[in-house]
Length: 123
Image 1: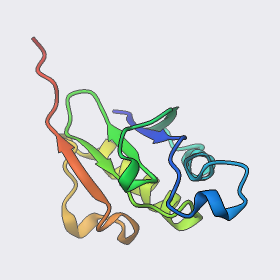
Image 2: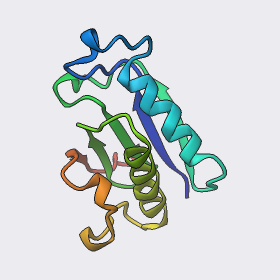
Image 3: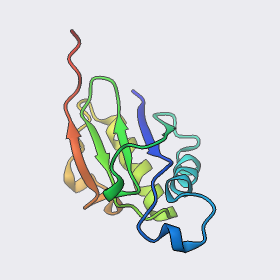
Image 4: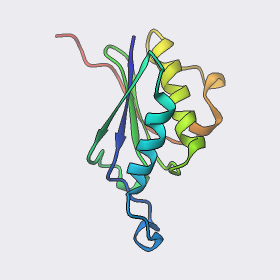
């Protein structure tokens, strides 16, 4: 089953305004996640404008139909974060419930979980 990584492309970390960057931190992270997910059959990506987690930027959500969903934040827009996010999404896709045992979490996602949502009811 496919797991989706939803990436907030409007996220700006606290120092963004003085950084001189032309793209938001969310856009930078999105580019890296999209590249890291390329060729992964069980992971897809999409961008949204604002996940409303501004104090936790950079934010992403990992979701799949009928599974637990997770919001993660406080990422640096770097390759290490992107690879950890994609690796977690692969494990989420492989899990029947969406729950991934802590011992299997990539180091780069530990400490970044913000919320967990139960699957929507079918009715």
